[in-house]
Every structure is written in C-alpha cells, then in structure tokens.
Image 1 (cartoon, rainbow over the protein chains, first blue to last red):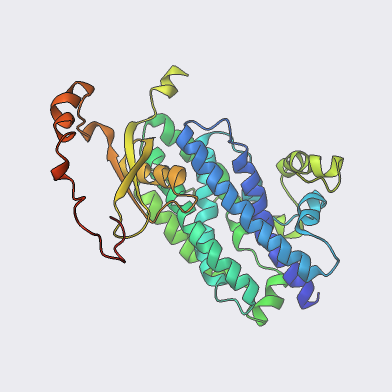
Image 2 (image 1 turned 60 degrees about the vertical axis):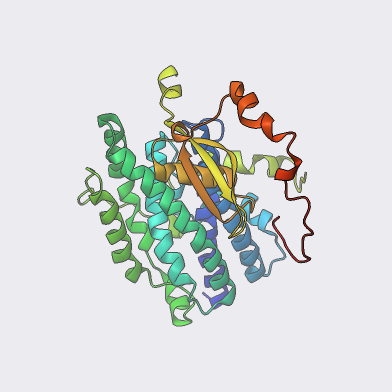
Length: 252
Length: 98
C-alpha cells in the first residue's frame, strides 16, 4: 500500500463516519420528541455532513481519479465504505440515538484534538474546525445522557439498554491496521492506542454522574476497517444514494 | 401523544447579544427542562446564523410584564412632554449606538 492509498482510506474512515451518522440524525427530522430537539439533532447532522463534504473533497483530490465528493458519497457500494459500525446503527428511540452519539462524540473530541497536530496540513486544518463542533456535540449528548440516565425508571432503562447494546461497537473505534502503520510513520495519523484511555475516562466521568453502569466484558464486534458492515448500512445507502443514482448528476 | 405534548418543560425567554457592549435583545423562546438545556436549545434555535456571541435564557415565569390596561397610566403621559427627549443636543461625530 502506498502512502497515498493509505491516506485515501484514512480520510474515508473519518468522512464516512460523519456522513453516515449525519444521515442517521437527519432521519429524526419530523419525528423528534420536541421541536427544540429536532433542531438540535438537525444542527448536529448538518455539522457532520459539512465535515464529510470537506473530507470527501480532500479524499477525491488525494485519490487523483478525477472524482468529486458526490461521486464518493453516492456512487460507492457498501463494502467500499469505512464508517464505524457504531455510526450506522439505526436510531431506534431517542435514548438509543443519544447513547450512540455520546460514544461517537467522546471518541471524536479526543481524536480530533490529536488530529489537529497531524503533519498533513489539510487534515489538521479540517480537524481544528471539526473539533469545535465536536465539543458542542459532546456537550449536547452528554447532557442528555445525564438527564435520561438519572431521570425516570423508564428513561434509565432505555439508556442502559442502549449502552449495553452499543458497547460492542466501541473497541473497533480504536482498531489500527496497515493504514495507520504507514501514516503513523509520517506523523499524519493519530495513535488510537493513546486515545482509548482518554475515551474511557470521559465515558466514566459521564456515567458516574448518573445511575448507569458501564457494560462489563461485552463481545466486541469489528469489521468496518475492512469495509464489512452490519446489515443496516445497505438500507441506509439505498435511501441516501437513490436519487443520485436514479438521476445521475442531478442538481437543484 | 398528549403526555408528550405536556412534557416539553418550562418556557424560557431568549436574549441574544450581537456584539460585546451591545444590549441583549429578546428574540423568542424555547422549551427546556433545566437551564443547561435551555441554553443549548437557545443556541441551536437562535444563534446558528451568526446572530450573536452571547446568550441569556430566563424562565418566562420570572418575567414581570405590564398589562394592556396599564397603557394609559404608564405610557401616555410621556406623549406631550417633548422636553423629556434629548433632541436639543448635537450629537458629536463618531458616536455610535445612540
């Protein structure tokens, strides 16, 4: 694998996670439990899709195959996506969405902070902008986790169940492979081993403020680094890519 | 459904300050269950298009308002007292926010 190929895959990981999670959050539009929350989830979705847009532009440039960010977003198939398994999990209920977001945001605030130090100036610049947005996303998702986790019996159960179900996708966030090896040598990539204790500390701090328990020894699912996904991604892509594939190069 | 509708929290009035030094201007209200969520909801509803750099949220129940019946006694006496308005001064050049 060349450095360029590794960089391309590395950018896709970050971009795809943002794109897919942004799409998931946008599915709440018209269905959120209250209008204020509909706006909040929509704002987070727009931030994430905006980040994905910039990153995919950069990925297209690195790939040098004369593609655009739209080609990458709408014309790749499931196995060519590198978003985390966590990001593609369905919304279910509001508590489930919040826990999915919390795990994603707790990773992102530490990951993006490190990525600002990347020797790749474009990635470092995009990370600096995204980090500010991630800090706000984390503030939102952690505030709701505290309130639901310390709320009624029903809200606590829903959030605890969500945590138990989603915990198995957290190990994968820190998985490193050949891509990371090549880019770590160039000081482009973030050493994810160093991020993991920070992530766990952040999650512990939030959970300590609630009556929620961190799941013990869950089976850990992996696969997205190889483009292998849960059954949910295909359905999401079908919806997200349908228009672009049905009417190629459509604009409005 | 009705349970959800009743469960949106208190109403909070939202005030946005455009720049430091300028007054906080009322821009609307949000629902929220506590002050942190009120602040976040206000941020998401009212400041995402560069409307300002500072926010106040205040529980609407703490705002004391005059009522329409008060208009006569409260405000009308000011109508015919032109000397109460500082219109007889020249404003020096360069003064802003008057």
